[in-house]
Amino acid sequence: MNSFFELAKNRYSVRNYLDKPVEDEKLHYILEAGRIAPSAANYQPWHFIVIRELEMRKKIVETYNRPWFLQAPVIIVVCGDHRAAWKRPDGKDHCDIDIAIATDHMTLAAEDMGLGTCWICNFDAKQAIKILNLPKEIEPIVYLSLGYSGDQPDKRSRHLSRKKMEEILHWEKF
Ligand SMILES: Cc1cc2nc3c(=O)[nH]c(=O)nc-3n(C[C@H](O)[C@H](O)[C@H](O)COP(=O)(O)O)c2cc1C
Image (tube, rainbow, N blue to C red; front, side):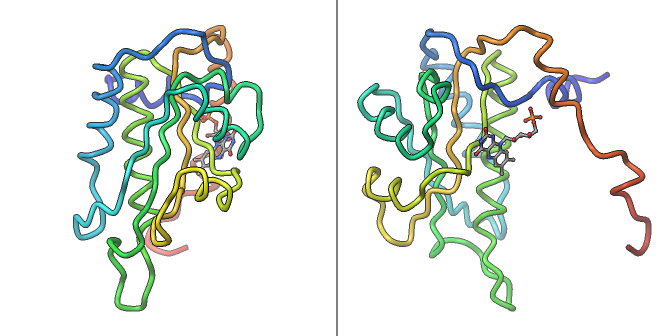
């Protein structure tokens, strides 16, 4: 297996974090991986809000109330600027797609640094907008929890449940 596949297969959603801070160099490496992600027409419609202070993490956890979420020493709120996103001629806004790519780059970079992440989209966005003081065109799209995993290595096998290739692959036509 080459290193990309090792990285992609080893990454899984970590919902159990150690009480151990994330080193600044590692955090910057992860953010840089998000910054260099591709985007539609290279418009890069993203903003990354890094939350580390306990008081602010507690406020954000109120918008997605899970005990494990508060364990994560870092939360990156990946926001999309809909004004800055590319729109297809039929009007389709590509902001969510671009945000997903940047977020995925960050999850893989975190794995590369030995850190765990979990995508979170099931949060109260209205509350998040108030807490983060976001202007109206900026949407909080993903929370990415980040930290050292407290899981046993066997937890990883859980994420290998995926559809079979024959269920999803089509050649030439659907
Ligand atoms: C767009 C998106 C939204 C997600 N939202 C949540 C969420 O709100 N809460 C959560 O615990 N996991 C969330 N996840 C994690 C998924 O449940 C997880 O990626 C999926 O079950 C596959 O498991 P794995 O990441 O361990 O491979 C989300 C993942 C994605 C890609």
